[in-house]
Length: 143
Image 1 (spheres, rainbow, N blue to C red):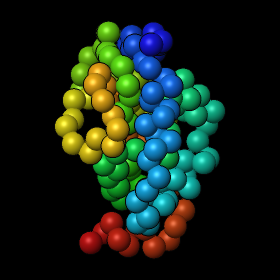
Image 2 (image 1 turned 180 degrees about the horizontal axis):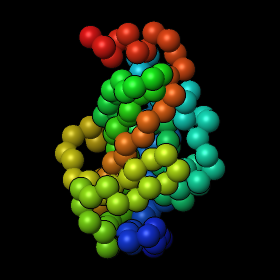
Image 3 (image 1 turned 90 degrees about the vertical axis):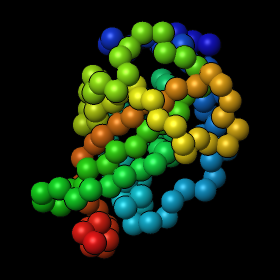
Image 4 (image 1 turned 45 degrees about the vertical axis):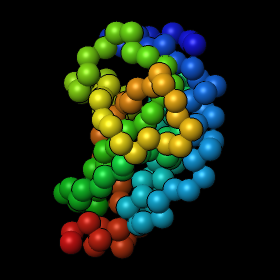
């Protein structure tokens, strides 16, 4: 386990185990909203990519990804990532860390757990507004 301090959070993370969980997720949603998320995420700044790397999560494999159209050609995404380990310090369900364009929080959500994930684990939720890059994706979200 490795202790990681990020602003007001102190996390104890098993990075190797977390990375292994994401490596075993081979099926990803292929809907246009999820495809747009993965493509738009390729253009994120280095700070967000470093944040995900330090925690051992795969940015492109969030759980329960939601997409909502916002003004202009943008989509607001929300979802969460699982991490193997424990929260030592940090408030649950408080949007308290901003990294690049992402707002992150420690959350308590049950469901959507990746196969092979065993206790202890916790979740980090996120919200981010990304550019719409696939033209059809906005049509699907307006239904």
